[in-house]
Amino acid sequence: MKPRLLLPVALLAAAGVLVAQNPATQQFRDKGGNLRIWNLTGHEVTFTPDGPLNFNGVGSPLFGESKSQGVTLQGRSLKALLKPAAQNSYELQSVDLAGDVRLRQTFPQGVRTLETGSLKMESRLGETFVTLPGRSTLVQEGQGRRLELKSGSGGLSMPPELRSSEGRFLGTFQGGVEATATEPGARRTASSQSMTVGVEGGQTSVAFERAFVLESDETSAGASRSIRLAGQSGTFQFLGGGRGNGNPLRQSEGDRQGGLNPFGATEIKGPVDIRIVDRRGEEVRTVQAKAASIVYRPADLTLTLSGGVEYDVSIQTPGRPDIGGEGQSERLIITFTPEGRIKEYRAVAGSAELKEAPKAP
Image 1 (cartoon, rainbow, N blue to C red):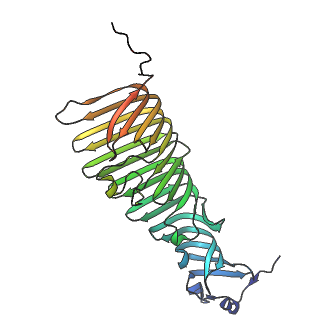
Image 2 (cartoon, rainbow, N blue to C red):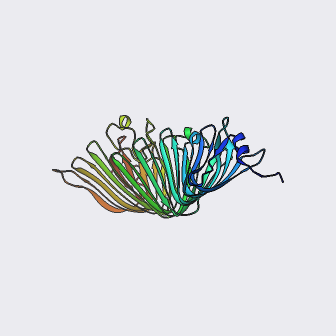
Image 3 (tube, rainbow, N blue to C red):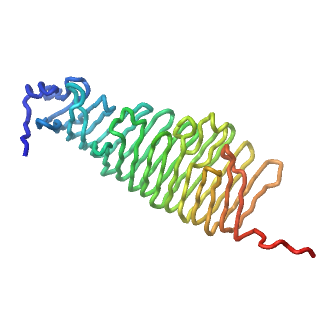
């Protein structure tokens, strides 16, 4: 076993770090001005000649910052490995933080905050992994959008270079998961006991492995749409539009020409319940249905409900008779316009094709 040395202050200074000795103002920082841990009531630094610094500290609370990584942290106890970076500078290689934890990560398009009782963060295999063993709240904000995830436990991975990550992450969350995404003109909520969320390149992917409810309310240029989906499992790919605006259900303002764009690629297994209310001016188009599964195909703008479908559809226009009906079918196909309006409903049961041309009387 290689020797582990508890460094005296003189050797720590030679290694590129400075330690304040006054118990009332204890802090640890590197000479390069990159990493600092302060408001400490006690701490210890251990050095291995060919490895990172091993830091243990407590505070009420303590605070820390790694400028190059865009990370600030807060907690009551911290165990960390600090790896050498630029000359006389160090970065966080791994973190074990407990007690009223708050971890903040900044990136070019926004900021991500984690609040929890304890967490572990480490860099390995070209990724940074965060483990959340207890209840936590994750908030990611930027460019007018906000995503909030509350869960009983979870974990996420992200690029090690957080400053250039553009907010990318992949997270799996369990135990009373609640997600809320907001931006001007749109609010979406989801709840389940298990949820996987991925954000990358202006796209958001969501997978539910257990029963879930997803609701969306949007408004745009005199139009509005509300959607409620409930199923036993499902996968969604929400596209951010031509400008990479990260909006799960709408394109960018320039692309959608004032309309509401339908879902990204979607597949839901059931039993499934869906309700869509599509308003433009005083006209209201509504569909409420139950089915065994739902598939949305962006290429042809169709939402297909299959298997024991029960439906109730209507189109209400002031000054004109209502159009609609209810029934049962094998499939219900809803077609949208490129702007996201409901264009038509089509219920299909059996085959409507003629096998043989009728004979003349």
